[in-house]
Picture 1 (cartoon, rainbow, N blue to C red):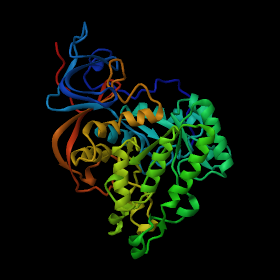
Picture 2: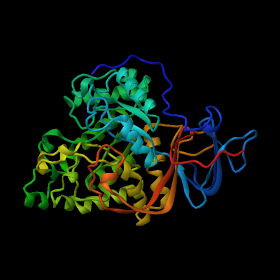
Picture 3: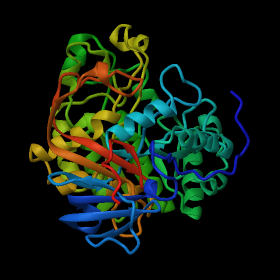
Picture 4: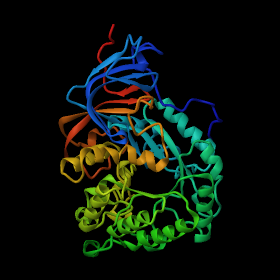
Length: 457
């Protein structure tokens, strides 16, 4: 597809709420009596919060000349930093029959996600600044969540020639990745890490050996054997991870390991971090709840990559999250049209629609005592901000960008796949019960989800 030229635009995706006065009401808010939970700054207290000009202006005492602010009575609710989703496919450009930036950004803000990080496997591949500008322009037109681009590590993601890495970083890409696609050889991988280290660029790696995982769709174990499903062994994750750690020791590159799925990988990452390597790691929300047992019913929504592994692996992922080895939880959002999940299990397209379950599943971990509430929120806010070196989001300090989510902690609800806002209804969590729901979301101080009370005089 053809892309428009650089439009020279402000990339903040904001719009004026209906009926407000631009430059005044739209940018001034009084959030009254919320329980402010900000793990990045160690805050957990009942506060009044004042927003102005897209920033957090003050706490408790309104700034001078703060007339015409819109007010939210937030007593009994939690105010947290906007969730940062580290890896979410939005399907645009190139696969708009599955979803669009607009449809997925709307789903994101309904679930408290204010920042979406888009992987580079779009069509065309996100290996030029022009594609990044196109995506960000689409996000601005949608007027919902902010979209940050992850650039391609190699040209066309073919793993043969390095992309213009420095140019992509200067053009606004927050990290570089080759997704799960293989590099030509380890020499090229080492060159990429050396180059990234020189320019201070974060590299996101999804360790998956192409030869060990080829045609696989389920965890190698007794269930896959009984069901006759092609297996993917744990070594498909740990073998490339071991190579990566060896190269990091020689290059000093800052790397984020995305989507850890096994106990063995958690142990390797813990050891590497203890040795002082600049390595961070994440886990997808569904891996913390589902296991190979869920593939027993041949539910195509459980066809995922990496696959759902054993209960022992799931428990190790939870422990790694609790002790900080895994610093981020992300959605691994992959919306699909209905037909993509109608074939026999091995022939369906892998992936689930995860935007609207990212926050609920993580809060459920706190509810079940896996980790404290503030730590659960930290894995969605502070964790991804630190992994990507983002300094203007992930917290609620005065002066920071006003990306916020207000949660009703007592709201009980059940997930209905048919009512998801995302264009992808492919979720294995249909019918699951949750407690706690987002009532309001702000992006750069603009209300993009929920309703405000009348403006104060």
